[in-house]
Image 1 (cartoon, helix red, strand yellow):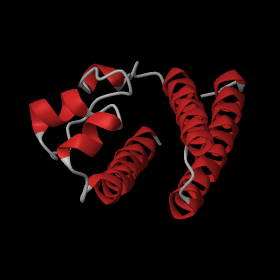
Image 2 (tube, rainbow, N blue to C red; image 1 turned 180 degrees about the horizontal axis):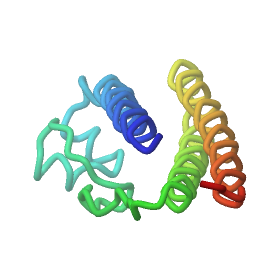
Image 3 (tube, one colour; image 1 turned 180 degrees about the vertical axis):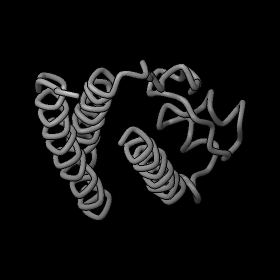
Length: 138
């Protein structure tokens, strides 16, 4: 079961990363250096031109330490639930700042996916707890 969640999580991460890359590319592909500066992306432009550089909203570069795994399925699922909820909140905050209806539609879809994933992970935690607490006779 752990492998299934690891496989699912890895594929999901790559899919969502791809979505965000497309959004950012579409929003900045024709931007001039002046527009990048006006949008608060002057430092990014100075360091990376139009290249996508993985960082959070504060400009802190992405690192693999953001991915946490304990090796205990229940603990790992709680980590996954927290990640889904953080992503859901982030999508909502971006929607709140955006006036682009196409971007907002895409982000709304992704936000709803995060809610469903969180619910499925919560269900999996309950199944694992039932199995953990079941008396085993050998």
